Amino acid sequence: MRAPPGVGRLGSRAVAQRRPRCGSGSALDGSWPTMRCARFATRGGAGFAARRSPKFDCLRGAARWLLVALLLRVAGGAVAHGQPLGGADAAPARIIAIEFVGNHRTKQPVLVREMLVTVGQPFDAHQFEDSLQRLRNLGLFFRVSGEVQPAGPGQVVLTVRVVEKWAVLPLPQVDLTEEGDVKLGLDYTDYNFRGQDQRLNLKFKHALGTDTGGKAGESASIAYDVPQVGESPYDVSTGVGLATHNEAAARTALTGTRGGNATSVDFDLDVGRFERVKTWRRRSALGLTVNHITASEDQPRWLNSLRLSRSVDAVDDFVYTFRGFRAGGGVQLFSDWFGSEVSAAKITGEYTRFWKRDEHNVVGKVSGGYTFGVGARDVGFELGGGNLRGIDKASLRGAGMWLANLEYRSPRAWRWLGGACFTDLGVAGEEADLVDPSHLAAGGGVGVRATIGRLVKGVARLDVAYGTGPDGVGSLKVYFGLKQPL
Image (cartoon, rainbow, N blue to C red; front, side, top):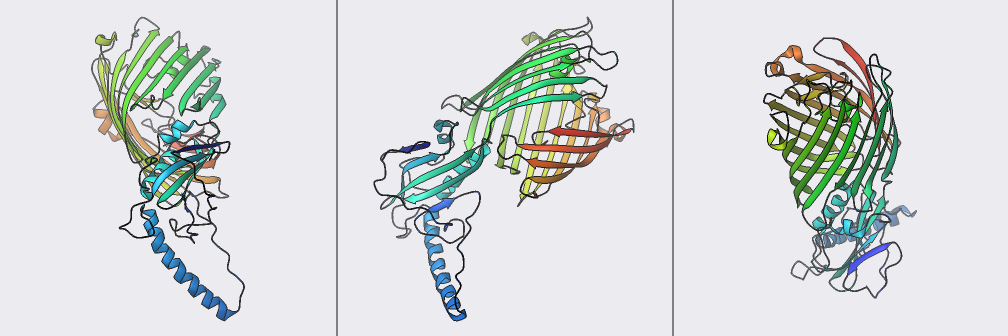
């Protein structure tokens, strides 16, 4: 049977018989099943309406339905574990086809590579649900659901339905720095470039130089990420950037410049090898950064480095809330072996945990690092701004740092508007500063989260934070963005 337009299909043959439509629920989600179809979805069915009847008939009918529902619940448990209704000794139902519906822009191979079930193998409900969750974790879809439909004795057809998000985001940028400089720009991102789950980002920003003693400057960059190269377990990301004058410090943390007549050109290349386990993703990567700076004579001209990193991502995405953990660590080496005029070793590590209960979400993150070597001052750490809210951006600097973030996100009202409260705590400096309470900076505040479900990264946030730093002077800051801060 030929698949209709907009429907992708995998399988050895078409199903000759007409497949019945699904009911409003199934034995797999605990609602009333129809025995014709099992449905996996992000939202349960509406159930069936009660009939108006005399009291005695109502009680008798309720008892009958309860008994039938209990029997079908037991039978549905067999289907959920890939077993036929005939019993555990019978052969499991086999998958003869997998259909994809709704992927108008996303290419079918992107969906296929996320599936843990394949045509010809016995049906397993847990693997099918993990496959749907892997599709949600891509962040490209507003809704993902699945159906299991009988197609003959011992055979089933799987249908995966997706609703795509809008993945192209051309966003204007308006930024006012603490020093009074006004910056205007454009940030264009395609999160599903070529329909292949690849990411293309173009940025341009112009600093007007309105701050005292400042100069106008520009920054531009292009970045391209390929999360999987063909069928191989490798990914690649690369980027090129250019910045002049005041923007040289904003483009890259490696420049060590704070304005003035500086020009920075940098190139980044990162190649990783990953391993998929259910919905988890483990990754080892090797990265190279080449950064050339034209500035005053007392500043280095080349800051080249090699990065080694290891990470695991076990976070499940539910559009507004998240569950699981993410951890990673790495070493970045600056050496004359790579043509760098700075010699240093930078070690970093971080751990993020998401706790989810319904739409209540608590997020905790700890991170830290230290830089060793004679060039530690030039390639150290900076805190303040988005990572330590309430503190001036990049106002805390040093060879080492540690940072703790804690945030609570409330359920949404009207299905789109939620709230948040948070606290950030951290310090940056030399060895003794990291354990000195007088160098500690802290901030906290409240915010709102507006879900724009049809957009990739579609959570608009507005945070108001008050912080106090080592100088003891507190200030009120406002932050806006289009994704969750943690």
